[in-house]
Image (cartoon, rainbow, N blue to C red):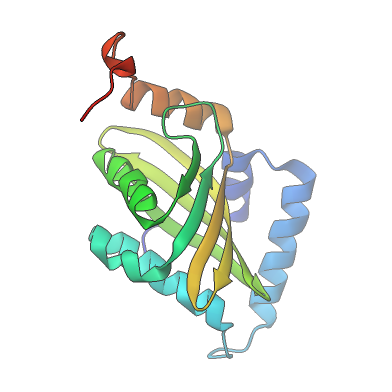
Length: 179
């Protein structure tokens, strides 16, 4: 899936400090204790397959992973921030990310009940300029993603990048109703 990052690099990119060091240490300890080929939680397998589909660049390949009433929240103060509701809005969000050539490399996945926590490296390629660690909390319902909440390791960098790449239309066009 690409170049591997050390714990130190994950912490540097996220600014997580001591809490991040503890979480990364625990994650590394758990991974080291897992037996090769150990049974993986089915929701972790689902999210792994989701990232494989995302990596293919085929947005339609993502559709089967989403519950019809999915809610995907992107925190921040930028044009792509907010909660996307329904499959079409979520796919429209991913279409916009595709304009910046976003890529993702999974670093850590863990499940507890209906929730999967994911840490991944996410970076832009067109234009290059954003390369940070992201955390996502996925809620799974009926073997589909029903909710996702996305957290940027460096929200200020994400906000600045998204404003640079996705500027608002000038006034008055941005306020004009479109048919």
